[in-house]
Image (cartoon, rainbow, N blue to C red; front, top):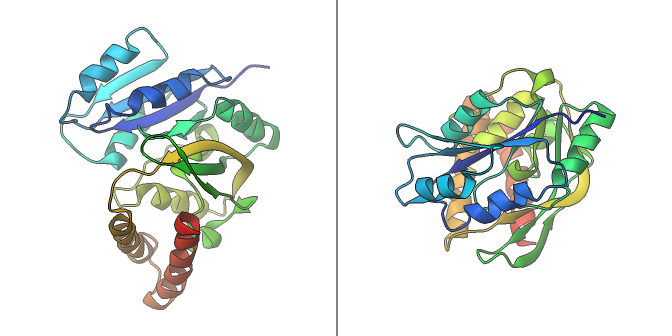
Length: 250
């Protein structure tokens, strides 16, 4: 069977501390028909030079540098424009995949003819130690279910862009969730491969502050991007907040 090409998009900003481990988690995949596109968002450290050095002998890895600092959404969108694969996957510069992630997810999508899939994942600390916190996802999720949930981890998503057509992440944080909603709004369904195939790194000392900022931005997604009334936004937001607390703290 011909293996379809998977394009992996990795935005990078001051990522030297973790990015080689991330790159190696892609290189070590049991599924080898991939291209990894790394887009540096004008890092202030020497990440760009470090990435060049680490990837110079691997033709499957293409690296680009934005002309000005534009944020993760624009970095991802630039990478998406360069993509050649049937499938599109996302992996941030500090997160990791288990070696069989691509193989299992491509098979899952090919066998079932799915457009949009995601997987379970677990959380680790800055040093890579597992935190005994897993995000276990439902078998499927639609637009209205996602409005009140935070279950789709960007590092687990795979999209069939031959079927979905051109996509771009909205320049509106959280840009990944805004894109998933845009896709699912058209009566699509996202399906979960219910295995833990990725590790999300929890970085920083102000997690509660960051979560509050994300919550505020999610309210804006409801109101501006999705055009939902204040009353319905309040209903969805309350359930979103409860599920976010469950995911991160329970």
